Image (cartoon, rainbow, N blue to C red; front, side, top):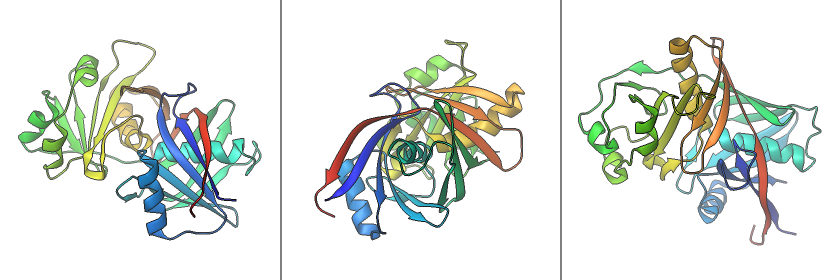
Length: 266
């Protein structure tokens, strides 16, 4: 029998929305080239590979081009697969050993909560070409380990902007979170989009790692520890954000399995 691979839409409870990720629960470790080839074959923003170890799972994430150190939606998808396919019972937490440290996921009703490292942003002076590459003016720019955090004047600008990805890719920092206060749907506190041409993803549909940056930013400005966020890509997705200070942020989302198949060549 070949390797089972499951495709999950994360940060949504509706098929064909949110952010799709492929998940492989491997019986034994595979080499990096094989994992990169599978990720390229799946051609999703991330493919996750898990191998069981003593009290959890080793977890790695690959885009079609490179391995990445942290991926929220593929972690959410991985946890969903572990519970839905019987690798863990619903009352067990999913413990992941990753290049970003130990990550914990817990099933809370229909939502999965992820315990992630916070990512603070600092004010910076962006190159003048950034506004041209994004195609919109901005209020301010910050920088974090993920890339730029760009604050726009309105939700309309966030939703309607159409970056020049080839131009953006030439800048010293090519990966960009854009965000604004939510104004069109007052159920949400803020909206965002994430562009990552530097790792081969022009626009990521819903990005957990970006919300590790957005959580402290919007907590400081909205003075709320619990926030509801919408990532306004064409697919769209919802993220519950909880941050009370310190070095951890809690992100919650839903997930739905849309496809399960078998890799014949392993």
